[in-house]
Length: 292
Image 1 (tube, rainbow, N blue to C red):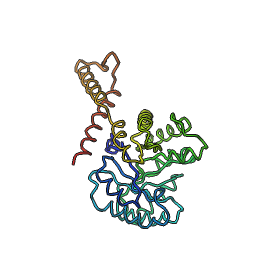
Image 2: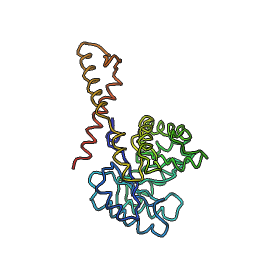
Image 3: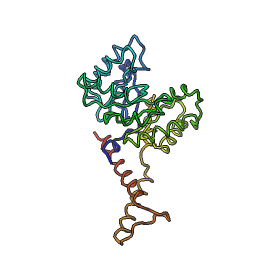
């Protein structure tokens, strides 16, 4: 398993780049990753100030082990090129690019980063249009620099003319397709946002659904969503206990020359052991990420 697959991305919090107070508060939040936003959360007349703010935040080194990314304005906007150039110099872990629609666009973004000196800056692509969903594998496999998909569920709902419901039935096929494409290309994939910041029960339910589907974590729009997301997208104590039992039972079976074992009456094969070892390794990675 790759180091990327074990690096926690349970909670990925959007922070408006124009709000210096919010950027300061984010330093103490337990989010695994931050998206310092230059796009939707920033008005046109505040774009320049926001760009300076987020680049200062990235280079300041005051965010501990959090993964810092910058969401640039989209391709074709008047701010995109300068956003990419500034991010290339600041060197966040990644730039987040909205409405990526093709592998060629990813390669164009990669070339722009390289030209500005950002050869070590990764790319996170937002999948939020029908064509992006249909071409998700081509986008995911466009370059090793693209490491992560982020689902833009609000825009996707709008584009397909669907409706937001608790079960998200309108976008489940798109979410599943994007997850399969990301996994086929060896990438991470992060679920979209939950809009009602006061509905904690609904939020937790959607996190659980996302984990069942296979997401690595969830994008968030409010600090209060961080800890619930961290809890849902991490192995529970019961899951860790079961993982340890699986490994122990399988090791005992191997010592007796057997290829399978049973735990609580259920057949255990090598694939279950691999998942058990991953759960333990991921828990250890979480502990390492939050340790200061």
